[in-house]
Amino acid sequence: MPRKVAVYPGSFDPITYGHLDIIDRGLRIFDEIIVAVARNSAKNSLFSIDERVDMIQRVLADNVRARVDTFDGLLVDYVLSQNATVIIRGLRAISDFEYEFQIAQMNRSISQDVETLFMMTSVPYGYLSSSIVKEVSSLNGPIDSLVPPLVREALRDKFSKPR
Image (cartoon, rainbow, N blue to C red; front, side, top):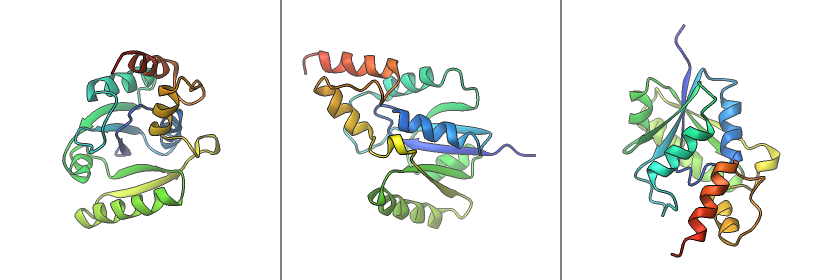
């Protein structure tokens, strides 16, 4: 029986407990999840691609069924190159759905072989985003319940340096 592989794409700048919740829950359905960090994201990133990959690898070090990779170009092409057939996307609110629905429809028009699975966020993470984490951290606010300790330390290091 072929392994069920899914790709969880994003910028992960930085990875949060909300992201990790989606990964953990996705692994109940799939044999493997590839956390695919977008190289060509239009977002202005706080962490470099190498820093993000390193943080995610360290956070997921004990999980042999989740691996980290990077991609650029069309997500559908990357998914197919990994012998995966599913893209996982987390949804927090209706506003997420509208955007994600458009992207899923475009991906489907590019390849009928790739499905998108939307996972509703768990209640404690319904408001959580990497942007909010960065904002709170930049103001020295509490983020212990939002990100793993190594991510918290990386954020503190970033925001303690003069910009």
